[in-house]
Length: 253
Length: 253
DNA sequence: CGTCCGCTTGAATCGATTCAAACTTAGTGG
DNA sequence: CCACTAAGTTTGAATCGATTCAAGCGGACG
Image (cartoon, rainbow over all chains, first blue to last red; front, top):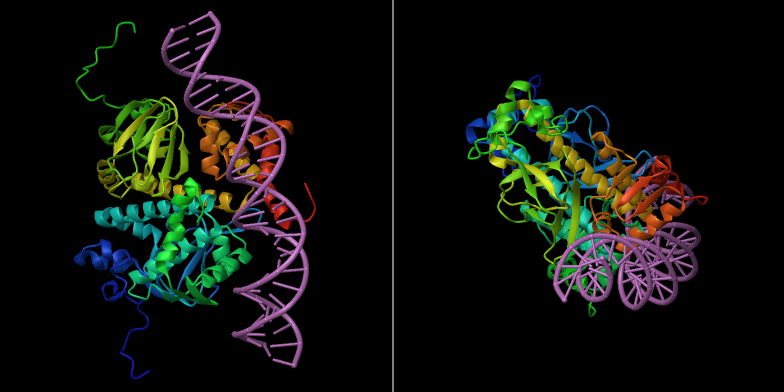
């Protein structure tokens, strides 16, 4: 619209990471101002994926990892038996594909949950670059170890916590991730269907639904479809931490 | 014993990774012959830990990661509530502490399950070294992404599989790790008590015990305490893959 | 307008847990 | 060297949370 600024449409769109609103969340946060263009040189910015579109597929040869610019991504692994396990949800500023860094094949499948814009970093170029930029290397190590940790947290959640605790934990996680982006941490739209929540948390869809209604009747939240409003964040936190007291399992809630 | 070779006991024992029987499993496998001494220069080799001794503790400042030389290690995370979740078992040739690489604090606690010998790699030195040795960097990325993947596998196991399937999977994992070290994959000693198995797999101890006896009565294995003999590996594999067919959940076993 | 898909709700079932208790093994001290 | 305790393991019976199966509901879309 309006007269377009004359871009040479042939040139691969040169990214300007420092103008990106997510530069304080994404990879740029780890590199010096004057090294930024070496990062911009390898990134292909802002490619659009439609809802349901696959970004990459498990077992296909590895090419890149991706930063979410807008929208959201879910990753999942598929067993030989064809069962799916959702392994993560990725929101703007987060990096998808770290579980495949250093491998030849993607370890999971990544799929757009909605219309999503991604920045693509070719793995080989990125790996090279981390040799030249030690802070970037350090940051990558950090991101990967965080990924391991959060996966361990998930395992913990799955093995020790009730349905209510798992869902409370997920809601709080989403909330804090929205807040990080200066968005409301209490009123937001779930990017994923109940089905994916259930799968991720190791529950049946019906159970997720039941817990949502239970939370509503307790006045903890209001939910209509994917629209969620957290009315009592403290109560949610209590639910997740309740584990402690329940661990003692002496009296009752 | 016998007349000792005259070592200068003052010198920090200089490691010789290339003489180590695990050099084809451990970090040395990733570095060129002639770069090996740069790795040896930063490692402190063969420190001994007694059963139950802590190698490092969650939230304490990070120092090193460790390669298991002999014995075995368990890692676990502790919630504010004091609940423990075992996150992994580490056997000779495996690297402990990757979930903390790039952090300031250890993300978990590591404890020796038996008398164990470890090689210590200071994190900062290791990180520096990976800048100089790209293959080593690549290998670290690979190890970390494998760690993420196996943690996702665990999550999958916890959320989708029955007690029998989880235990079968663990036994097969241990079996293949013994085999990798040229040891029997069918007759071995579990390094961990039932308790840790249960915690790791998200089960009650009693359930673990029951499954072991069930497997025995089915002739799949023989177990006396920690001594295990797998009699029918194929049956175990069937149990784990059975998920597929059971997913259909039509007829019965 | 009717179909499909995602979400919700109810009732019955089941696997695993909890509680309780016996048993085995290993380690300690008399 | 054996008794004795502590820790780890096994077994049984009752209970419970979540699942499964079944059905109804609402909105989206051709």
